[in-house]
Image (tube, rainbow, N blue to C red):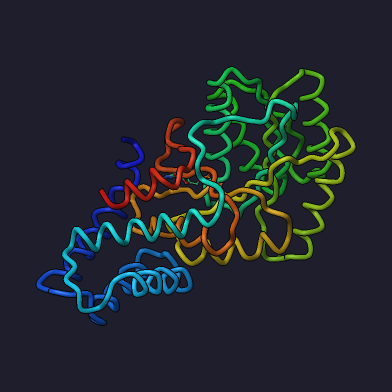
Amino acid sequence: ESLDKGLEKTKSTFLSKLGKAVVGKSKVDDDVLDSLEEILVSSDVGVDTTLRIIKRIEARVSKDKYVGTDELNRILREEIAGLLSETNFGTETEYSVPKDKKPYVIMVVGVNGVGKTTTIGKLAYQFKKQGLKVVLGAADTFRAAAIDQLQVWADRVDVPLVRQNMGSDPASVAFDTLSSAVNQNADVVIIDTAGRLHNKVNLMNELTKVKRVMQKVVPDTPHEVLLVLDGSTGQNAFEQAKQFTKATEVTALAVTKLDGTAKGGVVIGISDQFKIPVKYIGVGEGLDDLQVFNKIEFVDSFFS
Ligand code: GDP
């Protein structure tokens, strides 16, 4: 229900455009396909993914057969679901971490302003609600505000935050955080890291060093590298995904701010292009406004 609400704008824009594209049409002709292409691109599905969807639809409907709005809607829904199911993710419905990895270590990356801190706070809240012991680490030491903001969330959720002064070595904060988590027998560690893209080599070096130091405390960590992207920025989110995947091995995505934007289609495009699971979506500013991304629910809420 809250997913429907979070995606309201995407959905209403999308469906009303879709309705207009087929109104008065008696078949799926080139006009309809062109409109469809335009609608998908303007919902930020991305050009490549849009073309893939159009191709699937072309292959499926014979162009002179009558297709009403409902039927086109259904076909589109099935084809998008089909496209997303080519990637084996997005079927989870709960916040969970593997029990054999303790502490389970999540390193969070993303540029400033995308909702990284908020997402960490929301995640900590959800894990804590599951009865898991959570420790946060403030390894984005470049801005004092980033550390303070994370402290606000840590206090709100009531979980410990390991921090050092601004400008200290991110790897050192990561080391302290993991050590502290091990001492406390924590279940989940969430570490905030650098959000600067302007120097790619530095970013890569910094993240590599943070990882290396983490592994001194807990082998094979981080278990998850979660990239946070702002869904309302559409193509910028694609660009950031490209950059970060070059700098480090990203294993999961969180797409934020899908409420209040008509660009929710970005999730479909990103899933398709990067073949990295979209694990969470942000649909508001509150503690509860993070959802485990489930592609079936997502596509359903898009079209119904
Ligand atoms: P950071 O710089 O990446 O750590 O970004 P913040 O977590 O501080 O978030 C930046 C702004 O985006 C804040 O005003 C948040 O309340 C807002 N924000 C984060 N996630 C969401 C979301 O899912 N929906 C909405 N509407 N706002 C969000």
